[in-house]
Amino acid sequence: MKLAVIGTGYVGLVSGVCFTLNGNHVICVDKDEEKINKLNRMESPIYEPGIEALIEMNLREGRLSFSSDLQESVRRSDIVILAVGTPSLPGGEADLRYIEGAATEIAQAMEGYKIIMTKSTVPVGTNERIRKLIASHTNHPFDIVSAPEFLREGSAIRDTLHPDRIVIGLDNPALEPTMRELHQGFTDNVFVTDIRSAEMIKYASNAFLATKISFINEIANICEKVGADVTEVAEGMGMDRRIGSTFLQAGIGYGGSCFPKDTNALIQIAGNVDYEFKLLKSVVEVNKGQRFMIISKLHESLGSLRGAVIGIWGLAFKPNTDDVREAPAREIVEALVAEGAIVKLYDPIAADNFRKEYDHPQLRWCGLAEEAAEGSDAVCLLTDWSQFKEINLHQLAGTMRRQVLIDGRNVYTKEQIEGTGLEYISVGRPQMGGLSGFSASVAGAV
Image (cartoon, rainbow, N blue to C red; front, side, top):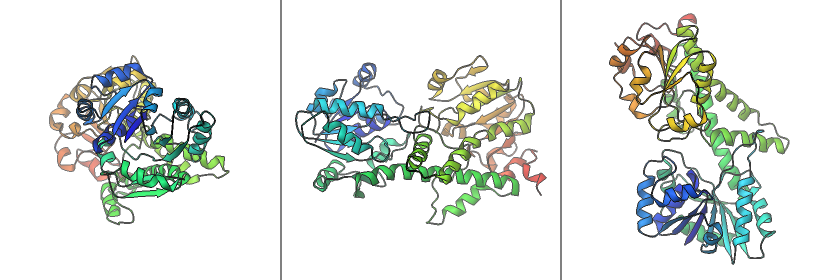
């Protein structure tokens, strides 16, 4: 089949590249000429492990191309995939300007029947709006399909090629064989439903996963007060098949381009039909507060932060990506600057993106994790990049001014911390805090 993918962000680029692997011919379209030129040089505008190798292979084999000419790309394609951004508006609802603009351009370019497939995350009812919009600009026949994505940054290629399920929303049952053929080889677990339900499945899935994260963080905070270990609690919970072990890792909360945006959008969707989603509002509130736990722990160890030197390990919202959108590090760093700290920052991939979004005279940009720790009063691990797990903590402690290590992702084990001399503070593991003389908060509660 011949596909045009409109938008070359995470969803569009990864989906487009992966659709070539089962024999389709794909044109990835973007208005940004610089981005298209970069892609034609086989350079990815996003950091995603493995993406550049797949771009190069499929460009050379002629199954993949990149273009800024939307009209010509639509005319040459059987299926047009909408994968443009739907960022949050100030009130939390999804901004549909880009997807509506793309739909209008698609309609104006059509010269015959097309299948318009939406991969962008959109509120319930959006595909019906798209249908009406396209119909108002063309007399050519077309069908609308909702096919929400469920990929995770950092493992997006694997998630696309080996998904747990593929959700297809249709109102024309005759399209089902075509949709199954398009996704052939990815998985046999294809769930076909109506369009509105498909749109809702995406939001409901992300909201549930966000709820698991906020729930385990609340449990972690209680564990610190009662002397339990949240990692043990989560492992025991996860053995129950009804609960499962995924997304039960306590820490400083979720970030990124999906969970914050989609939880707020679902709250707005509920509000638009006069329903207050109290549970999800609490999930968002818990997540926002969780990141400032880092600041509280620094105060407990150092007192005033004015003039303190704080090393930060990790700026991306998760490892294996350069994405800093809604990253907990942003608000943490801003809070440290506001309190008068000198902040030394390191991330192996995302530092440049973070610096474009936020810079300040009190920030010091470092090329190595060890450099960010040297001379610091405390180091705060905010993103669990694998390289941080390999650092020699015994040597590290000797380079610091004060030996405080706050592990916001519970990366380190008891064996790694013992004997280092570090005052080690993690999330929901009060027993770990006493390894090097630190008096855990549980002491005051016993």
